[in-house]
Length: 618
Ligand code: C2E
Ligand code: CA
Ligand code: CA
Image (cartoon, rainbow, N blue to C red; front, side, top):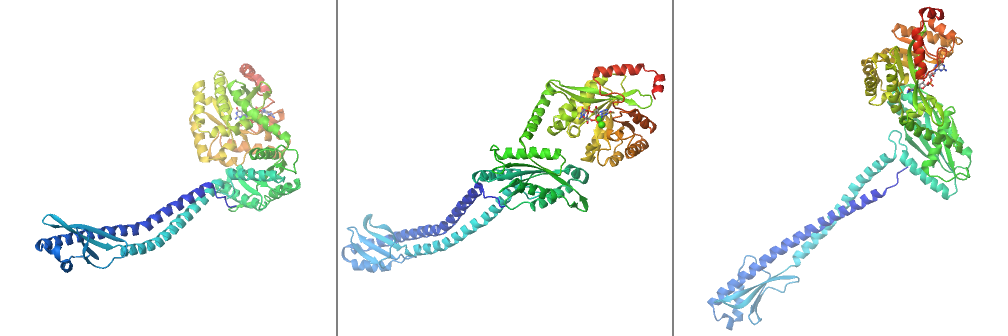
């Protein structure tokens, strides 16, 4: 799995080579050239000085012996011998004006030769010339030798300069390429590289008329591990999962981590569905032994969605890597829905579901803008006296085509896409506004999604709703689920305390369905606990459920927390709860969620109720 050397690597290599060559060339040429120029300049100056000196000496001699030029060339030759200069040139020639050489000293010089000529004066007249000359041969020889030496030094420099940075550069490039294409935690190809491999495999299988499968994996309940054991444990689990999955795939397959707890495999050379099923089974089975996370044994599972292309799955339209991965994702969604720890092949009708989800997503934004959301109010009753003591605001979506869409059908998607933040802000304000118009209502409860709660700005949302509606903060209660307490606990507790500081009440919703609720109850004192309706349902028939309800009531009362029982549908349940000291309840026995008008009527009737009738009902 070595990353292919990208074009930028080759370009870097070329630039580094050119730079190294330039430096080596300069080093090679500079030394001999400098030596040659310096010695030539020095020699030329010497030769010129020599010629001047000789000419001056000759002028003196000539003016003292006027007959010198006419008669006695031999004497001049003798006189030449008298020229004593500090640095004797290798050859001096004296010429008469007619160009005849009248005297010579020194031997013929080997070329190349440099020469300098100076006139000889006698009483202001030029009477002849002196030429001094030297051979450059030695300088050239030395320059050649120096150049030779510099050349080998230069070549050496070049090799060093090229080899050294290229090695470092290559390593750095390889590392950064690896980082850019691999996931640091597991060392597996990341989404970008995986997609690239998938594209290549897809093109290859098209060419070879072969078949390939994409398996999209998602860990089951990974969030629980992260939330309860911490992120470090979550990371260790992911690394261990990667190791186990690696052992399941063949060398020709690509396993990658697409992000979070999502992995994927490209399986090539598939001959029949069975090949892919076998791989999927093997990967699911790999999760059987529990994971050892520093002593804590944790069991985890995986769900797999599969999409295929090629001869094994004939008749399917050609698609690109992104869409194929999306098909596998849709199949994964189905696998999760149908019980987790299993795999599903993509089928065309699944796409329909995906399209519907997309449409719903778009519709929600329109719904906000066109006021399709409304709130209904489910009354909350005191179990003794059965007076209305509060209301829970419940979201309803009046969809122009689909009719009334229940919150379960859109709240989870709204949470996934984040639209819940806007929807929740609207619901919060609307509930406050409505409650302010019902002064006889003691409190209004509003559901807050964990996504909305964790978004920065939630505190300001609450402040704004209170200020704009003018509702007394003591009449607002927000309902949060245990899920909120599982993440960033210190931050969450600080936020809860800030909210409490506004004077509002905080209720724990769906109590008993979460994970480690009891511990958190000691760290934050909730104003109310709402026992989930799954416990109320079994109250009369299931001794286990009754025992849990009793325990929750005892514990809450010991801590001075009010308890609300949700989903009370039968008199028997209400009686049991009242006898156990449960303060309030809501459920179909008393009333469903009512429209604002219906609720206002109920509130008016509630005021007119006499204590006598209450006693009769109780
Ligand atoms: P929840 O907070 O547990 O709300 C109570 C749900 O139980 C309501 O369903 C209510 O109609 C239903 N219910 C009440 N009494 C009974 C009963 O006696 N028997 C049975 N079987 N059910 C009963 P609804 O209105 O469909 O709301 C479902 C969930 O949607 C809520 O569960 C809550 O989690 C969420 N939800 C509703 N409104 C909002 C909202 O404004 N914001 C957020 N974030 N979530 C909301
Ligand atoms: Ca609720
Ligand atoms: Ca609830």
